[in-house]
Structures are given as structure tokens and as C-alpha cells.
Image (cartoon, rainbow, N blue to C red; front, side, top):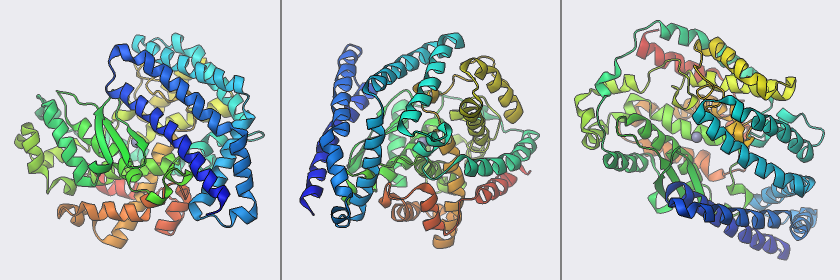
Length: 499
Ligand code: ZN
């Protein structure tokens, strides 16, 4: 390794120490800190973030990245370091174009907006949130103009979360999905839904936590490189290389949601845990392609977890944790976890109608950034699209346009990645079956770890080295298509609902 490359490695290590501290403080704030400790933790976070940002925008760092981009240096780097120099140099230049004053104002406006959103959502009063949302829209446009001058704002936003996927590609994929799934959901909605009252009862919280541990281990989560915690909304946090944490939220009157959240977050975490250790503290370990990440969590949650054969070898064991389930046959449980029904809240939607929730947000984001739709116009448009796609209408804006946090933080362009993940999953399922044989058989024989290892090998270990599109091309040998997931849904729900 050249002297310059060593310098960059050491510089990135220093940045990563700040990163670890920031991640740890955030995790502690969400999972453990007592009320009176929070204020100090917020200030600590602010202090550490400022230091980290200063390191990432320092002239010395920019010079190092520029030097390493010169052919005589660059050619001597290994693949992960080449990727790192390219990616971090691009980010450095983008960051440098943002005036410091604007950046600070944006950070503050974002914090205020998130606060207003919480308050507005609780009060179901959009007027509290509306001006903040408009500020987020305006500042996002401004920020994008600084970072990506001359680029279409929405394309730039999509590129940030799912590089290599533009709106033309997404239009085609989502359009096909919409066309095929609308009639499927209509057909299902004419069928009788199973009665869910048999699941009513009390589920011991500690038993649910034990079950979560069992499920995580079952799918391949490594407790030597990870742990769990409790938060309002489940998420996965990578503290540092070798320390990946998943959180969950447990309810006493309902256990299924937490089971599937555990499997979903477990999928994200397994991805993070299995990145090649040689990539530690480089850009290659920082998986920012959210569609690919979501494809992994949703593969475990939906493709594997909502297959009856996933449960066959373990259902009796699950019943030991949750005695209520001992009274309910597996077949009935299987119907329940695959109930397809139009509903208001994205995060609670089944895997099929989920597509409509994402398409709705995607269409609205396009309208905001392409057609100049304002915050004031959004609630009515939201309700109209809900009616159009899901045939239901929110009774207030809390369960309508304000249900998700993303826009309140200016995270526009993020939503499509959820559905892209599902589309990739259809292709991955096809490929797994081609290479390993019937997934039903593998699952029923309790050999799920063979599938986990396949994903580790094909996808996880590569970290951020390939965009989702490149990854699908590498693994499946073809271009991204919605056909496989549509086929999967049609076959699966024909069996369950007889449609
Ligand atoms: Zn996820």
C-alpha cells in the first residue's frame, strides 16, 4: 500500500470513530436513555456530527482524495479502495458546493419539521405541518441544486437512494405492477376473508422477545456481531463493523407483527453482518442502495417468512413461546400472515397492496418536483389517489398524508426503493430455485441457512460495490423485470384465495 493510501485509511478510521460514537449515542437515545439524559445526548450528537462533517469537508481530506485519484496512485489501489476514492471524492465535492450556512439551516429546519410532524400527526391537524413540509420541499430543491447543478431534482433524489435507477425505469416497472395487481386485488376483495378473532388474546412480552431471538438465529443472524433493543418503530442500526443491532416493538395483544418485524430487520442485519471484513471503514461497506437493502429484508420477511414451509419445521417450537398458537392450526396461521386487504397504513399493509402504497407516494413525489404541486395541495391529492388505487379514503390526514416520517425529514425519493426491493426479490427467488432447487423443499427440511449462505455469497459480501441493477445482472444474468414477482404473487394467491 502506498503512503497516501495508508494516510487515507488512517483518516477514514478517525472518521469512523466519530461515526461509531454518533451511532451509539443515537441507539442509546432510542432504546435506553432516561428522560433527563436526553437533552445532553442531543447536544452530544450535535457536537460529534459537526466534528465529523468538518473532517469530511476538510481541505486536507479533499487533497488526499484528489492525489489518490491520479493514475499512478489510483492504479495501485485494491478494488474496495478504488471504489472508496471515487465515491468519497464525489461526495466531498458535493458537500463542498453546499454553503455552510445553508447546510446548518437545513439541519435545523429538518429537526423543526420532524417535531412539527409529530405534533401535527398526534393532533391530526395538517395545518401545523404544512408550512414545514413546504420548507422541506423548497430546501430539498435548493440542496439538490447545490449538490447536483443542472440535474433534474427528482432524478437526483432517486439516484441518491437507488443509484442506477431512473424514473423512466421505475415508471415502466411500477406501471406493469399496477396493471397486473389491480385486478388481482379486486378479485381477492370479492372473496371471504378468514376470521381473525381466533388470534385474540394475550401474548407475553418476554416470551415474544425469546421468540425473536429464536427466529433471528434461525434465519442466520449472528449474535456475536449483533444484539437487539426496543424502540417505537423497528429498525436496524449498524454501530460499527461487527456490531449490527435490530430493534423491535412488542404488543401484548398481538404477536404476529413483531415476529415479522424481527425477520425483516434480521434480513437487513444479516446483509450488514456479512459484508467482506476487508471492506471495514471504506465506502465499500456503506450500503446506500436502499432498494438492494430492502430486497434482502423483504426476501426474508415475505418470500421466506410468508411461505408456509418456513414455519413447518418450527411451528411447534413457536407454540412453546406463544401457547395461544398451539390452539391454531398452521394452515390458519398461514392464511392470517397472508391476508390481502386494502388498508390505510403502508407499514401495516400486506405484501401485495403494499405496492399501491409505494406507487402512490412515488406519483406524488413526481408531482411535487416535476409539476410544482405544493404542500397545501397534497392532502386532497393523497386522498384521491388512495381512492383510485386502494378504494378507501383516510378519515383524517394523520392516517393519510402524514402517516410516514420520510417527507418530514426531507427524505424524498426514498419510497420507490421499498417496491424495487420487492421486484428484485421476484428475480432472486427465481435464481435461488434455479441454483439450489425448490425453496419449498429447502424450507420444509429446515435448511433455510443454505439460502442465507447463498445470499451471503452472491450479494452480502460485496457490500456497496455494485448498484442494485448491476447486482441483479450479476446474480440473475438478466435485466430487472417485474414479471417474476407478478408471477409469484399470482400463483401464491391463487392457492390461498382461489382467485
Ligand atoms: Zn426495511
